Image (cartoon, rainbow, N blue to C red; front, side):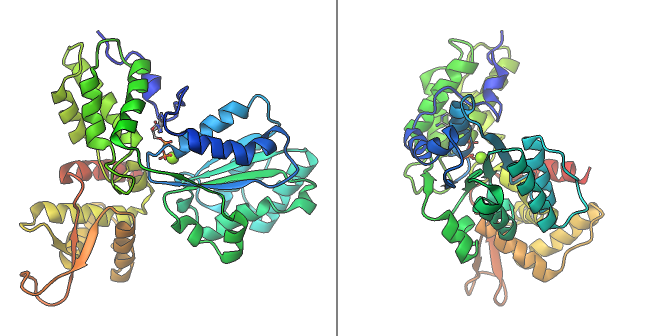
Length: 389
Ligand code: ADP
Ligand code: MG
C-alpha cells in the first residue's frame, strides 16, 4: 500500500494552501505591493527578501502572486538566478514571459533594453518581476533591471514592480550606492524556522501528501528536531526544504520495505542521504572548477587522519580530479578565490595553522564541520557528471 499518496505535494513548485509562520512576511508584501498589483502604474514598488535557503522566500512570493493573479493586470515574471544569469538569458526570459517577440541575440544591452521598454509601452504591459536567488546574477546586470522601473518617462507609467531575493545583505551591499538607494529600506527578513515551526509545516505536508495513519507525531517531531533551528541565529538549521525532503524520503523508504508506517529507522536512513548545512541548490550554482575544488577538499579530508586538510593537499587532489575529468586545472590564485567563496557560502571553514600542529610553516587549514563527507561526495559527483554531460 502506498504511503505517498500525492507526489505533487512534495515537488519543489508546490504552493500549499497555508504558510504557517509566514503571516508577517506576507502581510508586509501585501502592504508594499497590493496597491500596485491591483491598479498598477502610479508608483514603483520594490522589495528585497532576505533569508537563508529553505526559509520560505520563494513560496511566499508565489503565494502572494497566487492571491492577485486573477485580478491583476500585471504579468508575473519569475527569474531564477540559478538558471538565468547573463543579461541576454534574462532579457529573453522576460520577453518570453510577457509574450513579446524578441530577437534572441545580435543586439547590444542598450538596444535590448530599449526594445523591451518600447514593447512595454506600446502594448500597455505591466510586469511584476521577481529576481529569485539574485546573488547568482552580477550586480551590474541586476542594477540594470532595478533601474528599469524608474524609466517612467520612456515607459509612460510605472510599469514595473520588483522583488529581489537573496540569502544575506551582501546582495544589496554589492550594488553600487545609487542603485542600493533605489532598493531603499524595504527589506523583509525570513528567519530560520525553529523546531516547532518546522513541525507545523511538516504536519500540513503530511496531511496533504501521505496516507492516513502512515506517520505519527513522533516521526514528524524527530525530523523537526534534526532540522529545526534552536534560535534564529542558528546559521545552519531551519531549512523547511530539507525537512520536507527527509519526510518524503522516509516515507519512500518505508513504502519500499512494504510497510504502511514510517519508523524512526526510516528517518535515520533518510537523513543520511541529504545535506544539512549546505543546500544542493547552492552547490549546483558554483562554477565547475569550484565544484571540482570542493570535491578535492572532500576527498582529501576523507583520507586525512586529522580533521583538517591543507590547501596544498587539496590542490594536489584537485589536479588529479581535473585529469580524471579531462579538465585543465585553474591557476593557484583562481583556486584561492574559489576557496574564499566556499568559505563565504558557509560550505567550508578555514583557518591558519598554529605552531606544533604537525604542519611546517604557515598554511591554511580547511575543514568541513557540518556534512557527512560521503553524502557530500556523492552529491557533488552527481552534479558534476550532470554538468559535464
Ligand atoms: P527559499 O526560497 O527560502 O529557499 P522555499 O520557499 O523554496 O525556500 O521553501 C522551501 C520548501 O519549504 C518549499 O517546499 C516550500 O513549499 C516549503 N515551505 C517553506 N516555508 C513554508 C511554510 N511557511 N509553510 C509551508 N511550506 C513551507
Ligand atoms: Mg528560493
